Image 1: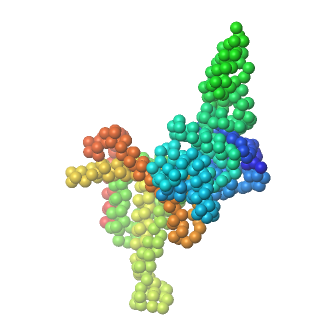
Image 2 (image 1 turned 30 degrees about the vertical axis):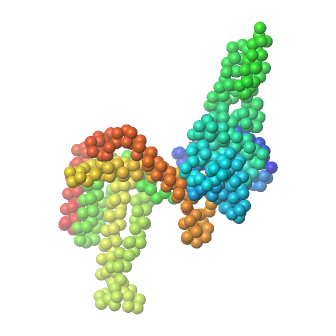
Image 3 (image 1 turned 90 degrees about the vertical axis):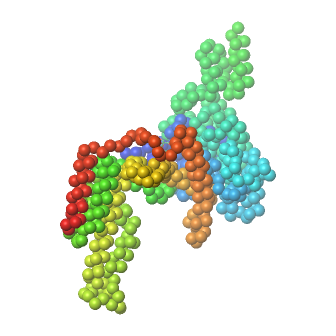
Length: 280
Length: 265
Ligand SMILES: Nc1ncnc2c1ncn2[C@@H]1O[C@H](COP(=O)(O)OP(=O)(O)O)[C@@H](O)[C@H]1O
Ligand SMILES: [Mg+2]
């Protein structure tokens, strides 16, 4: 059971002078029940990776399998069972009320009005929007963070087995970002979740696994904690390590014998304090 | 997935046709039209066609693109041919005859004349938009309309509207494409059912597209006002394009040659 890319390469505008190699023999697999964070600088191929995984782009080389079945595109349709939250998904809101909008996907899947309503209410609850308060409102009256959550609910309502999110927190304020993080954590119980972002800070704490992309190649694929223990890898991907890790790297450079790095500020403080005790 | 974008008229390049000042180019196209409407026979059309071929060749725009405009008016062309060529119970020489309807050779020639004229007209104007960037085109329009400001015609505003509209076409097309993909990902289908059902399927695309457009228009207007835009009058241009001696000479020579040809042939 997995959404797997094997030896996938993708080139935009192949054969022209504008050809851009966006993915180069990428092997990755996403399993159910895990949150995978795909990190990379702008232009490293993150969005392309998601699009190929979803079936919106057909790879030039290699293959994509969904739970063992080979899927070859380009399908004009995102694969059944795969939910895709595009960049700025609030652009997709159109209906008179939030509830009707969220029910759009389930209705297209052929559910009856009542069934679709149940899915819509469940999805609204999953993104932390109170159906009483928001269900009857126009999607165009929502704040940025609320609209983003409503749009994500519209994808969750289709009960995908894999949920792909492209830069889901871009342009949101702190409370909006925290809400989206909570959605990602909660979605793990029902789906395999893949989050793409260029901000290392954001989802590292909630990710089970991290994939680092650099110029279309996978340069790291492992448990989140493995990456936390070797923060210099961030620079290899053209990214800045999270501040908290940079602080601990500086402390180690300054001679403090830190046994390990921690992402949690309290744990990090304890590690530094412990190392200073040990140094005396 | 590619959204069908009927725009993208401009074919960037560095040919003499591209470099010609837009106002001079417009003047030449206008003279070309005058010539097309004043020639009386096929000799004149032949000269006009020769000029069109010459201009397209020099512009290095692929003829395929130029002819795309002709394809768009093909219905009109067929209609023109038939309207002039078909006769009810024709008395003159008839080429083909089906029952009372006949194709009259004289009429067919007249029809052909008008059809060729339309083709050349389309080629001439297509070449103008293909070789001039939309912004420069709007700019040139404004400057040509400027004298009308004396008659209180809002030339500056009209030109600003044109420029802004042109500026938003690519973004809007791109956005439409994104919304289509997002809705398809939610199971929307645009290729099912009868015409009414298909039209209704586009509601989830058109609503957000227009809402975003109006929102953006509102923001743009506020931002423009915040930067002291108070309508066209009194604004200066950032980069005024200038007519060089070459542009002036090309306009004068070209226009007088074409108009003379139109009068003589
Ligand atoms: N539609 C496209 N046409 C041509 N090149 C593209 C297109 N989309 C992306 N690219 C190029 O492919 C590379 C990877 O892009 P993308 O996957 O969007 O990166 P990311 O999401 O990591 O910023 C970039 O160099 C980008 O310029
Ligand atoms: Mg991207």
